[in-house]
Amino acid sequence: MKKLLITGGAGFIGSAVIRHLIENTDYQVVNLDKLTYAGNLESLAPVSDSDRYAFEQVDICDGGEVQRVFREHRPDAIMHLAAESHVDRSIDGPADFIQTNVVGTTVLLEAARGYWNELEGAAKAAFRFHHVSTDEVYGDLGPEGLFTEETPYAPSSPYSASKASSDHMVRAWHRTYGLPVVITNCSNNYGPYQFPEKLIPLVILNALEGKPLPIYGKGDQVRDWLYVDDHARALMRVLEQGRDGQTYNIGGHNEKTNLEVVHGLCAILDRKRPRRPGGLASYADLITHVADRPGHDLRYAIDAGKIQRELGWTPQETFDTGLEKTVDWYLENSRWCQRVLDGSYRRERLGVIE
Image (cartoon, rainbow, N blue to C red; front, side, top):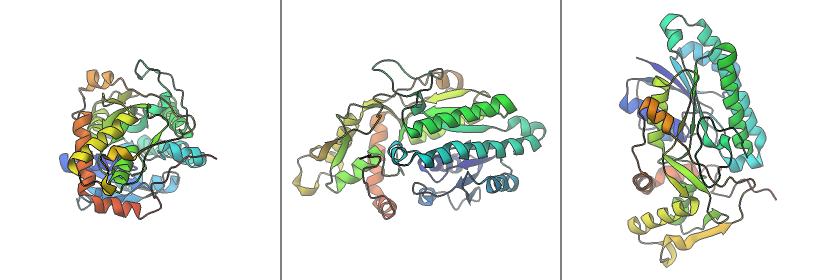
């Protein structure tokens, strides 16, 4: 039975990976998470009682504790998802992003290298450091074309710059020390258990309460949307079958403007929750255009051809089916949402510099 160490496993994508592994495979999973504002162990409630699941509350910047986790749990591989991940927060506080995403990744790489060097035989040959990154490292894409694995890096925000830096560190550890690595860069994720500062859950929760639905600028920013469970399956495919030292882009083949996404959400809510607050004719009446954020990239779009050709992965969900499932989950899990919102986040607009 293989054992996988997952950093950031209490976050949105990490918890989806862990639920997938416990429910569909025989993997043992060790979840290493600092439990910042976006880490929520309730997202793991469906699987937390499994005897194949263990949790370690550890900061990835704490080298001594990270080394202890490697020594005690003896993982066969590591999937690194722990990161500060919100662009708007990076505008207000870039130092935290450098500390976690760059310094923390370096600490992990060194701990993994020390552990890997002590392994022997088949265990050493099979070990992998899988670094999970973002398409935002590529910067702003023009009205045509797609990001490929060969697209030059041109990050626009402190968040994307910190993720680009961590990608380079991983490649350096592979080139310099021979550490076996794979890197994935994904498009925008959405789905159940997403922290409500992100566009889709924010719109759903605000709409249900009759609050404004804020849209940056004209809402013409284009993103490629990837359902989180599809992403979890892709990550495992890369971990198990990806070629050493390679990068794989993971996208959902769903390019939509932000305005299209919000109108789609409103249409689903009009149908599923027709008793709208304040007697609104449609939830779309709540759409409010606000000033754009600094350095906002206009378009991201992923060419996921490499992972399809080499590893046979394609997304199972269309944007319509994924969005429907997402709305259903939030409508059925209002208690989870309320407990999240009882914390420090109150759906304020983040990243505004006066």
